Image (cartoon, rainbow, N blue to C red; front, side, top):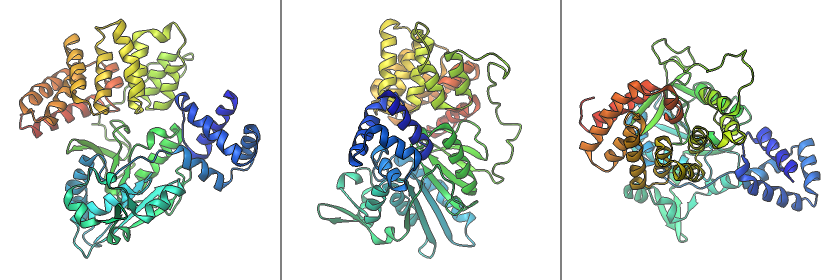
Length: 460
């Protein structure tokens, strides 16, 4: 059975560009069993058939059961505030001569995101402007639902009342998207493993949303997708990723922006050009290329420096006992799990570490980050406070405490914690920046804190 699961995992990576670690073995086993039964084959024969002749129809069937489709309108609303108040006005100035905007939603699932893009954009642009939105997804079934434009009322739970009244209509116990929005959105079935010269035409989009998809892709497909996205953005165009995704502190052809409490990216005017010398240096690998093969922990750190997150997690999870039980290994594993969005496993791992070593500041910090991801700010704050108390020189919990205070409306506490974070970040260790910086370097984190200080009315 293990060999069959490994074959299916390899096929999904090769054909769909998706990565599945051991924690999703139950899902893969169920997918393999049900698809083999539907074809009246043994599981091994089914895999042989799929390997020899990867049919498009069968790939679509696999995509429909392994892709994640939970979403809703205006999810992570702060990104749509940045879209409305920064990206769209900027792109309108750039496109004033043609009066047209084009937006792309990658991994659009059942359509809530592209329809949200349409609503936000049409609220901002004059009626004579042409607005078009393309939604891409590999899952044909969810694209059919998206094109129908009908949803349950719960999917509007974060939608502002004025938007609901203008762009949605009650129908059969749910809601239907207004035809004016539906006319602006085109849904396209597309596998991100494959290039497409039309969909990814050079400099063709003003805004691209690609949220919470990159973390499910293999490293090779992820790098190719990022490169295509960057090339497809017009100079000065904007890219929005999910909170679990990061391109690091110096993505090629893109500059990091932070407003409205969210990170996003803007394509440089000369995209894909070499990074200027003033940008912060990438932390060099700890071991030169000619060195002997690295042990699991050191290899995971090296992969993390190269932003090969999936491979880093695999490496640290393969560290043998007794080294695997060392606190530094457990913290690295927890940080990588949290980065991958698996906050449940990350928190549980670090809580076990804290049970044995209550004074481990790094473990408390990871638990705090996990509670933030689970929308539990009070619990997050307790662990960040513990981390800061246990290690007064630890910058990251100070930054997170400042962010939490700002969200709670406590401007005085926010200013105090963020100011302290700026000071501590200057002397923070490279390893902690690497582990806990979320893909951002020292100078980017300092810039973030200063931006937040200005937002609460404090001098930076």
